[in-house]
Length: 118
Image (cartoon, rainbow, N blue to C red; front, side, top):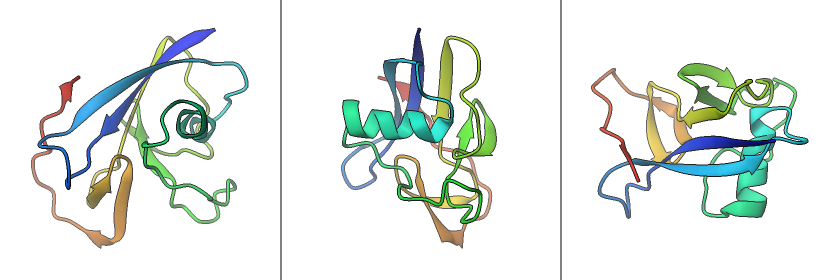
C-alpha cells in the first residue's frame, strides 16, 4: 500500500527558504516513523538529514521530530494510518538542516519560517 510522506527540507547554507518534499513510498515493513526515514535516506534520497544511529529504544531521546504536528520520538511513533504523513523538525531549537536541530542551543519562541510546497 502506497502512502505520501511530506518531509521538511532546508539547508540554510544552500536554500533561500524551507520547503516540503513529498515522497510516495510503500508502507509495507515500515512500522515506525524512524523506519520510514531510514528507508527514504537509504533507498530514495540520500541527501535527507535526520538523526541516525540512534538507540531505537527511547534511551537517547535524540530522534524527536514533529509527526503530523505533534512532537514524537520517531523510534517509538508508529506510522499513522491514512494516506499521508508530514514530518517536521521539533520546535524550540536552532535548525541545522532538514530534521536535525541543535539540542545544545534552545532558542526563544519566534515566528517560524514560511514553508512552500515544491
